[in-house]
Image (cartoon, rainbow, N blue to C red; front, top):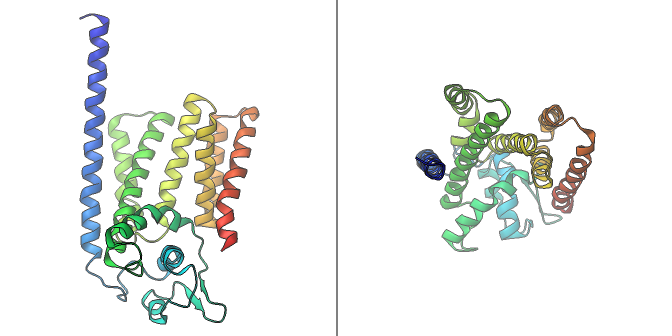
Amino acid sequence: MNRAGQTLLSVLAAIIRSRGVAIMILAFVGFFGYSSVEYNGKFQLGDWRQHLRADAAGYYIYLPGLFHHGMRAAEVPDSLVTIAGEGFLLDREHDRIITKYTYGTALLQLPFYLAAECITGWGRTNGWSMTHRAAIEFGAIVYWTAGLALLASALSMLWPASRSVKLLVLIAVAFGTHTFYYAFRSPAYSHVYSFFLVSLALYAIARLAQAGPRPVWGFVFAFACCLLVLIRPQDLIAAIALGLILFMRIPDARHWRMLYISIAIAAVILAIPQLMY
């Protein structure tokens, strides 16, 4: 077979492999997404076992609070605060919804919240319906799966190993740590989103190390790290560790000027909505 024929076969093989991987990922998301919605749907709002309460409600309130109430307390019943495990408070005197948590988790939940609004009809519910809860539950599985996929790609580029080793690492991270619990059982908490952002930052490092400093991947890295810190300020430790990994891969100081600018831009973009609140 000539070179052109061999090239065509290799391209076809790559397409088949990529389709197979895509089908596996979709099946993975479908199975665990359906299972999460089915399991968590057993618990009603007000039940201590349902996930959208306490800290989770404090993160989530930005979405119904903004789109349904303009972050005003006037139309929010006191009973919702109790049902939500007092994850947020109502300041009746100043007509404000008060939460001590930042909006970072809600920002990542936003696409799935909007999908729920489209399904139920915009403004027809208070944002706490079963459909909204199911959307958040399914979304957490999507972020968990995306985090695993990004982690696998990053590890393949940064620390090449056999397929069996990669598979064992993924299984250990997926089911041997708390990531599965927070994706499946506590999907409205911040942890699974932090995991996704760490994986995204690692993937950006891998792309930067492989193809050289690129503004796009530099900004992706900066945005992921800044959002990681916004969601949980103590994750500054993780952001610093990621920065050290990047420095070890790209030690040339000339390339870091671009990264500093990207971090400053990402930090300002993410800080403005929080400061407005």
